[in-house]
Image 1 (cartoon, one colour):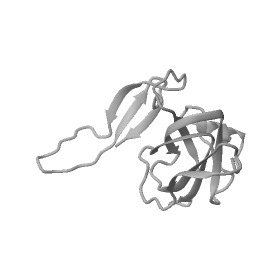
Image 2 (tube, helix red, strand yellow):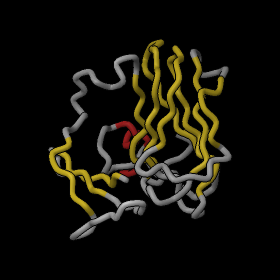
Image 3 (spheres, one colour):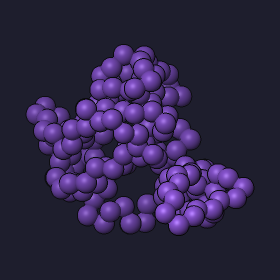
Length: 170
């Protein structure tokens, strides 16, 4: 990573499979980047990027490399104007060893803290990942909810996982 706020907010927290931990850069100065080394060439077809502040709008790009010297763009959302709610998903198909997430903007001006930067191969993450969790409960953010014909309404759900973690779902 370009920098880390402290050991408790180290870059390893962005890839530990836990939404309650995160990598935080040492300042709000942008751009900030995080590199993941998969150890060998791997086929990658999906990235799921979850920022700690899911209500903020982030500009970012994801690059890939086979040698950590020459980088190519996988996705460029530097002009993004939408929230991830709860995460940003980028699909494609590339074989590489290194992947770099560069956050270029945060609408709030706050930290570009990354709760999870998940990288998936051809099985789309359906393999026996020890960090994956099962959704056990979904809760509506309101006591009651009704929609009349022709009416559109937005609300949030809260997903509760087997490890007790929660995530907003819209």
